[in-house]
Structure formats: structure tokens, C-alpha cells
Length: 292
Length: 223
Picture 1: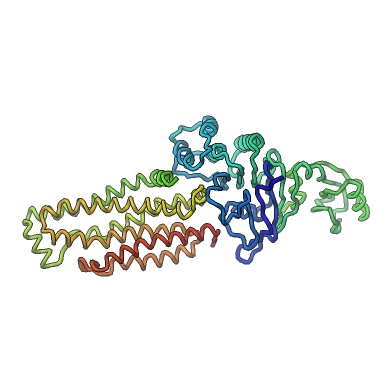
Picture 2: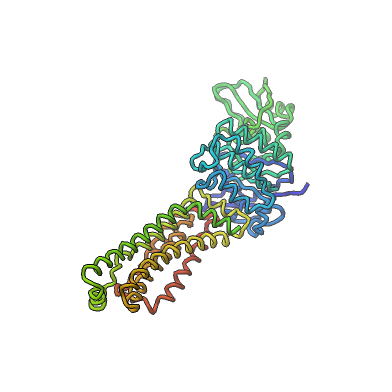
């Protein structure tokens, strides 16, 4: 499958602080990829590199086959960008912003924008800076739908939104991307939203990628194991076992290994009587990255 | 696409444009009213004598008005772009970033020049009826460095506003103050006459400084 977004061996520092080293990933056409990571792991840094607002120390990123730093400006017609916090020109009204953007995009779909705007309980002449964050998210989403780009880059789309607006955004985006075969790269700090939306995920920890795979495959393999142990029990570092923790005498750990394999490895350390359960994406994320 | 950029700039700055127009024309008109009052009380010949003997130009109150208007114009135009870094939206438009910024600066510069030209026209409209050509030209030429300072203040403030890091903003601010000082060094009327074309050229060159800020912004420079 053709890769629409491709990053190769990206290394970036802020001053002397390493953000990540040799980060590589690709997003095939028509897939929705979510980048998950704790605060400070480099999600927004990655978005900034992808949108051309940050020059990585080394490595290269390509969108639609063009290097981002040397991209033909007209190629940006095929790329929609949602800035963290649904930032838009605050001094414009719903009508003015539509009129402004429509001049830049030949495939502009005015009806798609106004269809979404009709759901908002705001006057067409209301300025964006007087709207709630939820209403602004709908304006941003409407503009993305009207632009009809091939690639969508969305930075923390759920920031500041209440559950209703988040659900509306996710459902609209999913339906749109799938129906129109759009490629989406996004981040969000609310992982339940991602689970409804994304096909593939990258889970990042400080400086590296922990997991990069389809969500279905991750949730198919990932399990939480719980059991009772002595309060001072400490599990030795064991390959394939993630973030074991003991609170009072309850031990919790995570793994993607087959159940028999996990049981065998734990039995070698005197741990038995394990309860196993499937987990959602949020628990998988916590299981991989830890609680703090 | 350039028209759309002008449209955005117009929406952002239209109320300030009106205010700046009223202020600039108002100050010019008020200065002319004062001249007219002297004229009606003591006669035009008295004006001539004072101008020639005491080197007076009667419009000193206008000295810092263009400077203030230019500075405020840049703040009104570029502060909303830097708020939540929405300048990224402009840079993501399918147009060369330098072209987008140049269009914004052309818009601001053209509006300012229009406002300043109207003030000069107001002064000329009255002065040429009571003063000899040599004398009204003397007044108009003496005010030109102030209007150039207004354009310079606009371009230098744009440079500072677009700069993404505070350290550089402070440094740029210091440099801008020193550069603006050049426009107010010589107190004598028409002192800049021989230097005006070069000063105008240098003033236009300040627009290139905003391109440095643009480059820093696109490289993701941070404090």
C-alpha cells in the first residue's frame, strides 16, 4: 500500500534535551493513525515537523512523496491541518472565514461547511473569538470537510471539548475519512476517543516508539493480569511483561505474549493464580507506558 | 489568493484603519486650524515673517503621530496572528510563505501611506492658500521624515511581533529603537532633504527583517 506520510530516522532535541532518536513511521493511504504518548513525549513536536513548523535535527519527513521542507506550496492544498486547541482566525465570523479559505482551494465544498454550521446555535455574523471551544471545533471541522484534502493532520483534536462535542467530532471524522478514503494522522490525549476513530496506533514513550501496529491487533494481543502476592513482592524484570505494580497485596501487570507464555514466565518467579482480562486502548496505553 | 490575504488583513485592521485615518487627519486638521487662527488674528504676512526669521513650521505637534500610528498598526495586524500561534494557519495556506507575508506587509504599508498622504493633502490644501510655494514646501518637506518614521515603526514592529522567541524580540526592540532614533536626530526643518531618498530606501529595506522572523518561526525556534 502506498505511504502518504513517511518519516525516516527523525532525531530532535530541544536544547540538549533529546525528544526522540531515529523515529521512523509511515501512514498508508486511507488509514487513520493515532499518535499516543504522555505529555512531553513529542506528539506536538511530530505534528510541528509534519506541518513544516519545525526543522528536525536530522532525518526527513515526506507527505505525498514531497519532502516537507521543500514542499511545493500548492501541495498544501491536499493537506488539512488542525492546530492544537482548534485555533482559527479569531477575528473572523463564520461567513468571513469560509469566504477567505474558499479562495485557496479549487475543490472547496461550501455545502459541507454550512451543513455543519447549521448545527451550531450561533449567528452567521458571530465572531469566532466569541464562540465556545466546542463551537470553534465545529468551525475547524467544517473547514476541513470543505477543503476536501487528501491528508489530514490533526493535533490534539479533543483539547477543551466536552464529551458531546468530542463524540460529534470523532463520528464525523471517522465517517468522512472512511467514505472519502482520506489519510489521517492525529494526536489526542483522550484515548477513549482514539479507540473509536483510529485504525493504527503509535504509542510513544520518552525518546522512542513502544508500539506501532493496528489497534485491532494490539487489543487482540494485549492482556492485563492480576493476582495476589505479598505486599513487599517485587517482580524481576521479565521480557514481554510491562509495568508490573503492587498496591497492598494486589499485583497488576500487562503483556502481549500468549497467556501460556506469561503464566510460565511468572510461575518461574513463584507467581500463580492469575486472572486475565482483555483491555481497551486506554488500559493498553497505561499498561505500556506506566501510570506515571 | 493574494486578494484573499488582503481580505483577511482588511477584516483584521479595518476599525483601526478608520481610527488611524481619523487621528492622522484630525491632528493634521487641528494643526491647520491653529495656523488659520494665527492667520486670522495677525495676518498671513506675520506667518511668513515667523517662518523665515524663527525657522518655525507650525506643525511640530505632528512629529510623533505617524510613529505611533505605524507602531500600533503593526500590533493590530500581527498580534492576532501570533495569538495561539495562528500565524501557522497563514503559513499553511497553499501560497509561498514569503509571498503571504510580503502581501501582508504591502497591505499595511499601502494603508499607512494612504493615511499619511491624506494628512499631507489636508496640510497642502490649506497651506498653499496662505503661503508662498517655497514656504508650504518647506513645511511639507520637514514633515516627511516623520511620516517615513511611521512606515519604519510599522515595519520594525512587524519584525518584532513575528519573532517567535522573547530573547530576540527584546534584542530586536533595542535595535528598532536605535534605528527609529535616526528619523528624529536633526531638529532643524528640512535637515533631511538631501538624505530623504536614501532614508526612504533604507525604510523599505526594513521589510526584509520580517522575513528573518518568518524564517525563525518556520524553523520552530523557541526560548
